[in-house]
Picture 1 (tube, rainbow, N blue to C red):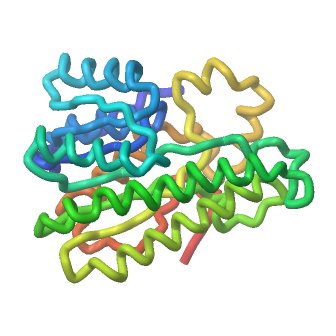
Picture 2 (picture 1 turned 45 degrees about the horizontal axis):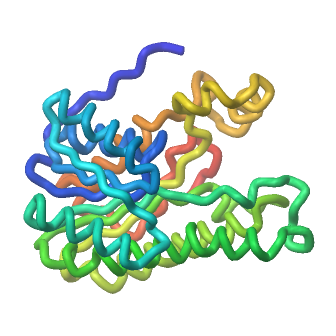
Length: 262
C-alpha cells in the first residue's frame, strides 16, 4: 500500500476542539486538528491510551490534552466540555466519534437480537451522542462560528439484513445532526455527519483476516486501498474550518463510493 501523507494547512489555528472518542479514527482526528493548529481535548474511556496520543501530539509540537470520557454519562460529557473551556478559553468544535459494537453478530435480526444488546447500542450510539451534543451546545453557541461533526455510518441508509440496532442508532444520529443544523444555523453553528466506510487502522490491520479485508475491498468502488483515519480527519478538519463555513445539514460519505447520494 503506497504512503499517504496528507497536505496540512493551518486552518484551525487557535481553535479549541473536543474529540469525543479515541481509537483509530479518533486518534486520527486529534492528530489532524492539532497539526492544523487547534488545541485538542481527546476524550475516551481508555484515558491512558488517550493520554498517550495527546503526549505524542505535544512531543511533535501540537497542543493536546486527554480526559476520561464516557459519552453516555451526562456528567462525564459535561466535565470534558468544561475542561476544554477552562484550559483553552472556550469551544469551537466537537467531533463525536465513539461507538458500541455489541450488535455485530450476523445471526441476529430484529427477532434474535437480545434486548440487552439493543439497549446498550441505543445507550452509547444514540443517547451518548445526544448527551454530548447537549453538553457542548452552550459553549459552541457562545462562539460566532462553530462546528459539530458526528460520525455516522452507511448502515444508517443502506438497508442491511444485519446490525439492526446499530443502523437505527446511526439513523437517529443523522436526524439529530439535521435538527441541530436547522435550529442553530442562524447562531453560527454548523452541524454535519461524516459516514466512513471500512477504515483500516493499526489495530484492525492486526486483527482482521485476509478474507475480511477482501470483503471490505469488495464493498467500495475504489479498489486501490481501504479508507484510513486520515481520510476521515481531512474531511472533519474542512468542516471545522472557515473553508467549510457554508456546509451544514449534510451527511458526507468518506467511504470509497459504498453509498452514492444526491
